Image 1 (cartoon, one colour):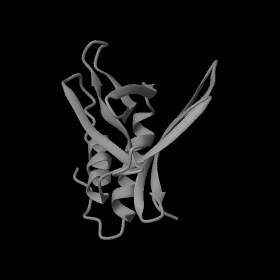
Image 2 (cartoon, helix red, strand yellow):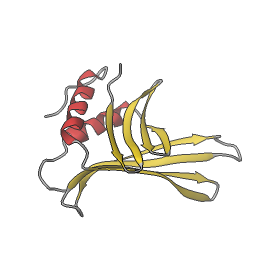
Image 3 (cartoon, helix red, strand yellow):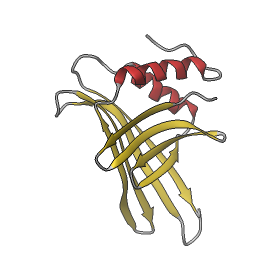
Image 4 (cartoon, one colour):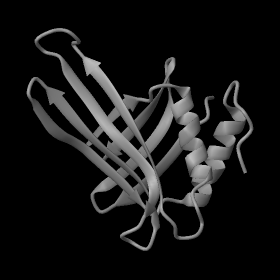
Length: 150
């Protein structure tokens, strides 16, 4: 089984999740809300390694910290129905809320001259110790991986 990084939580609306896993030959981020989910690919395995390292490096003390990735997929490329689905995914400490840790995903759709909002999934106060353990296992077990940085 491939290593994964996952943060799941429940609220009054239902289950939410941000999960990184292999889908065929590529690594994807699945963002799931109670009534909607979507997945987008990372540019490559190096982006997934950077994400795992960013989780390991998440500071324990309040300080500015944020890493961001842009994910995208274009459908019906070079046709009149071309549509691009893209998103930003960030890991960090919120400077406006006591440097509380977070994972945040916001997607958009672009077609022709129009861009619209897609899904937003934000995990506030993620289980940092569990994410660090997942990141360590991910970096240790990923084929061709270099050892995690302390």
